[in-house]
Image (cartoon, rainbow, N blue to C red; front, side, top):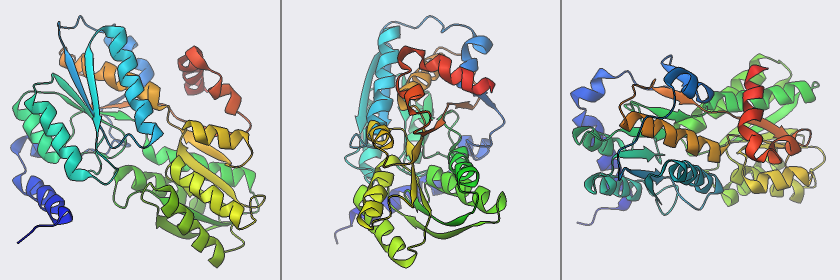
Length: 353
């Protein structure tokens, strides 16, 4: 009897949790947004000093969700940028699509077999790389979970406070649409930590901090532009008086922008995305996309690589290293887009406000 791909993935994930090692049981389930053992990205040098001397021939393996999304390509650029600065070797590989859970697991397990010294992984889901975590622990290979799904047993995580992403957008609506109205959410992949947290941050804030808003729809767009276009088209047909969308990533948001334009509602419906990809910036400058929450993937990649190198050199870092993000609209798009080499200084300045 032939086994379907979906059944294979489900069986792999189920076995991983049933196997549950003593090591995993010793760690509390990671919630990267609320973990108290944490440090801000900008505090690494001050609290731990300069990067320790690295052993010769150090090899770092990076595993991404996909390279079809600009965010993940940019994250890899950050890995490479910091690797070049420190003289270490890095390989960056990815699954064929954001739904290829088994393919991603195979890539990660291959890097362990090849003897890489430390791994940077961005899981497809919270569960699909759990078997690899067990193998890496047995091989004494440190693993850093980097945005945006969260492996519950991860010992180290580098990334954004995901809930804050949705909170920022909700606060924009409250401040800029004081009369309130109907809003909708286009979520990422169902059950993925980042999608859940971003969505909850938006919905809870906009309905709690103001009683003038109603979330009339919250549907998965599965990180896909066309799926999100179709979802937004249906929502606008049901709610032609909608005043805004919040989308869990920029690709989906750009699909929603097209649906809003097709419905002739571009002047009435605000659309926000997440990630800060170049197409989102261009759309904001063109007056189409209202805004995005930029999570600065290149900088996040640099910080994650630094954390990985500190760990493999024996430094006992906190469980979470949080990275910056900012709400980008037409009012401040130039400040961040033109920051260049001063971006770190700009973001540190933001943290002080």
